[in-house]
Length: 173
Image 1 (cartoon, one colour):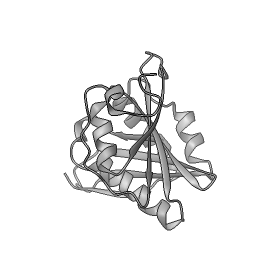
Image 2: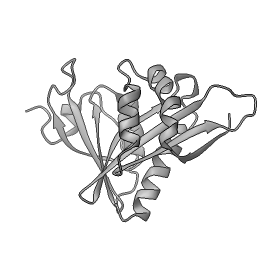
Image 3: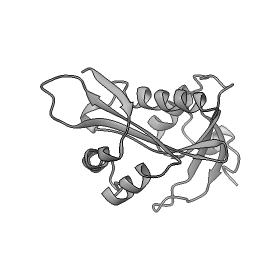
Image 4: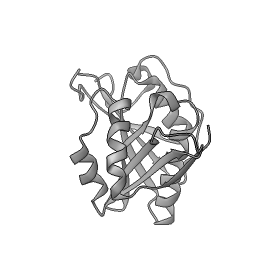
């Protein structure tokens, strides 16, 4: 399946909402999506199929927020049926590349400590652990804080079974 990545527009909010509903148990509301896309501090990209017969709408999206010369990954999602095809990687790389062109060299994110696939994905893109928010999510799962700076390169670091064994700052305390 071929796809193209482009900068998101405010009008894309209507197509992002069903993508969110398909990708997450707790999706962002259409109002939250529109609010995010309407902020000057937001940078967002979408991926869509280039196949003419495809009518499934958007395949993925990513949103980052700029604040004090740094960025925060707010959201990244891929339709479940389109996962493992490089869409999320292409979206995040497009975002990071554009941020670097704007002089933004640091990007932060948080991820559930039990989301092994996402942690590996972020590690492969050069994000490294910087902290832990204990019992952060509604189910009391810890949030791992990861950061990527321009001078860091993907390490290919492996992900261990327990975040407390990884030596993350704040983990296991």
